[in-house]
Image 1 (cartoon, helix red, strand yellow):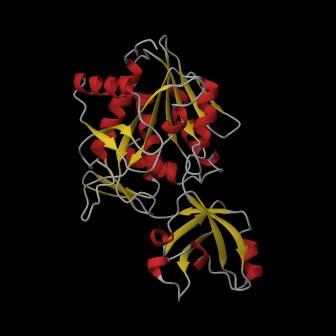
Image 2 (tube, one colour):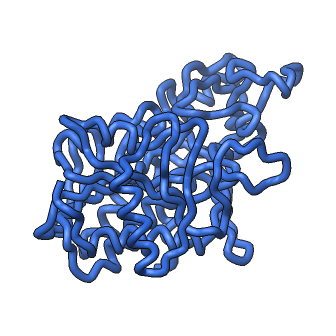
Image 3 (cartoon, one colour):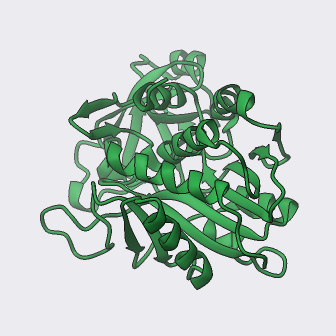
Length: 333
């Protein structure tokens, strides 16, 4: 299965924060032949174990996505909604959305709402219902919706909703399939509820109690017109080794270990420093008495919009770095 096909398969499943079971089921089916155990915990994390004799090494890639939750159905049949995670109304305006039961609609703004200062309260989802009664037959209060944008590829660039963070799930899947022998005791966590507070990785790290932790996620870039130097990564420059963001200052030992492995294996890498934003690394590093933690980031344009963009060469570099970490024994803590 190619990367694009795998991404399409994951995006076809329903998986907003708090309801990741559909995505977890797809990932479990894909990784089961390559794992020693596959389990889902109370939080909804999918935890995949690949045994090894070395220290415990935990990789975490969140499988949940941002989305919408229906809060009210109007007399006219329109849906008012709340947000799951960092939904920006301006970025979502006039985008197709899809509910778990297959109902589709359009996220739109009120006609008189000022686009520049658009608020979620000034927006609605239009499912084409003629009135409240018809809408209630189609969806219910509490139902969740996700972006329903297409996936396409131009050269090495792939555009898709929910690169954040399905592309990192693809990376962990590819690494699982490519690892020849685990030098470390590897735990691959496809975490739940990252977009609403890094919740899944927190409980998973507590349960696994790893010696080392790696969060695999997307990162913002500094390579588009008008960039304000929000991040340091660029598309096509390789796997981004995280140094820090607002949730974590990565352990120097882990940063150095990844840089050394990258050099030895001729894996293209760059540094990832973000002025804001965070990943599962933020809760892994503080688990129990602390975990030596780092991050592998996929440079991504237009994060949290319906059309996120990554470069397939960066995906390959991230996969190679995850694989190298699994296959090379980490120094004792």
